[in-house]
Image (cartoon, rainbow, N blue to C red; front, side):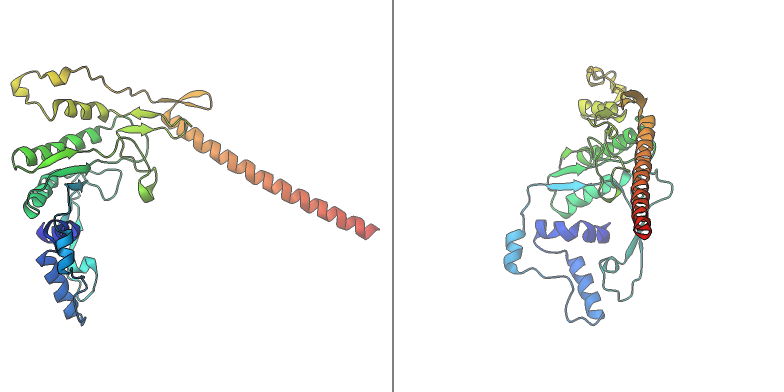
Length: 299
């Protein structure tokens, strides 16, 4: 945790909280740079004025967290590269639950550990968890039980860090409220608590089943102890989300899956029609040109 933590989080956090890169990071990169024949470390050095200016320039520690990896030593020789400086590779345990993203495995135990690392390394700063969630891909299924499980497990680990370890957690934000554009993967990976029907021009938002479990956690501010009997927060009138997966498509009421099939079919037919028109115009103008040529030869 310490080595990878310094290269993952510490690269940015250590200068802000402590004024400079960690001694571990500076030593490793300097020694590897000199061993490769360089005259100085590849890691830039802060001036005393820069250290004074940036140290303590924070309001809180904004932390995005999704998954955990296992580290193992790797010898890179004299390769001068960020990965080689860490001298470590990462892998996920194949027994961990999958998600819709190849890099995201369900491993909640690591959440509590990394929160404690931040507390111990940076003087117990106030932490706001700004992103935490899980994706799915493929067939639309509003019964996203894996998301309910994910949030319950990860929020429970955050509560343990807060209540048992004294980590100064000030807030938590699930990623994300609704399905959206996920960088290079586009709309194929969906992190939302609400499904967005993109086959409807109005883009309606449809609640997934995880909305109910997540709203219960919010209402109860955690997980009530069953041994203490019924809790008012479990009967606060929060209704289950409407999981009706019917949508309006070209004036017809269809399921989400049928609407998506219809949308793709419509696009395919549109492409065929466009290609047909192009071919028709091409042969028409070619025949017209050929006809004019024949007339000139006759004359």
